[in-house]
Image (cartoon, rainbow, N blue to C red; front, top):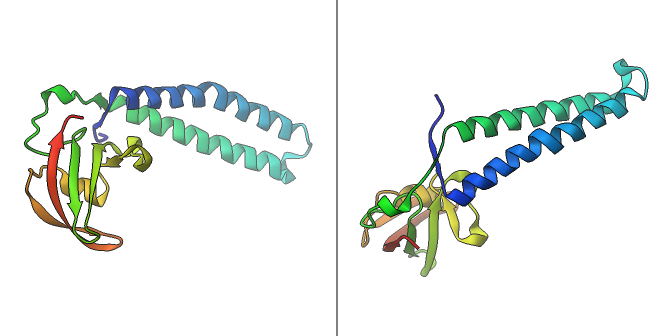
Length: 158
């Protein structure tokens, strides 16, 4: 059984739209590419045909992955969350003591992570370390850039 993943309503809609696009336009484009490659002659020595078939396989794998993700997707209702602990969909403000700077991010699922929109994945080193922490907690996070000392300053719903 696959892991249940929580999404915002917008994130789930984006996932559904991406899947629909792949199932309709993506498959139609793939069929057209395969047909065009097939028209070019001997399939045993047709690199375009081989490439199109491989691309079709990759598209179908991505569709299957998205279908599985949607089957196990749940919308996280932030109205039931307690702001005494950092949870998925919480907005957190924390201080990174290594660079002496504060950051504010929303903790989201992997597929919704977007640093430009201040959304970090709960599967990232910092996101994972923040989960379950309370305001005032100081802890070390092991990141690819080395260990970072962080203090959780604020937890909110927005």
